[in-house]
Image (cartoon, rainbow, N blue to C red; front, side):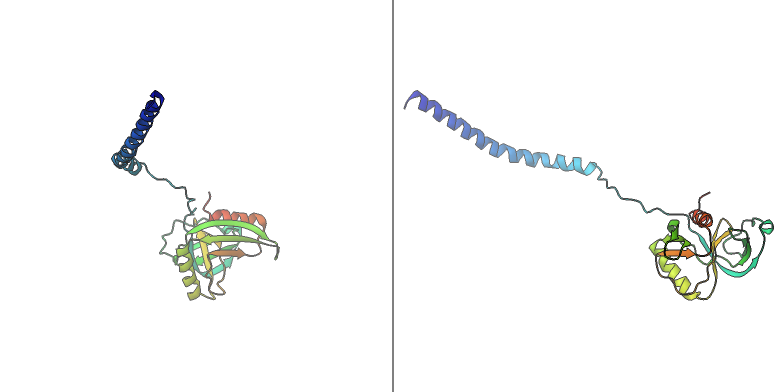
Length: 194
């Protein structure tokens, strides 16, 4: 055997030995380091980004007992009234005085917006409720068809529609003869913006 052959053979043996050693050491290191890696992963909090559901302070729903036409100078702000007591107050435009019963429901709103309906050319105020409030509102409207109800915010009647049929949708569209500015003000009040 020549010197070159011996040297090549030694190199080949050394490489084989190194590979064999690596084949043993790498899995052993993996097993030994796995608990430490798991520990580091467990202590690192996992964060996710989810868009929170925007919510608005619940709005009071009170049955309308009577409504009387009035003038703005006769609309005094009502004193603070507990939810279980009747309320006498004006509407947002100060053109009517309402005698209201105690609160029946407090729907949780998630979105309120106003816009012009291009099909009817009338202003709309669109209100979106939580799923739970949608269920409660559907039950309430089914039991009060033919009656008038008032959405009340800060002791003021924001909207007082007549229930013509059960309403079971999550999105309500309130419409009437209101100007763009009035629709925006109604939406602002329902959103509970100062």
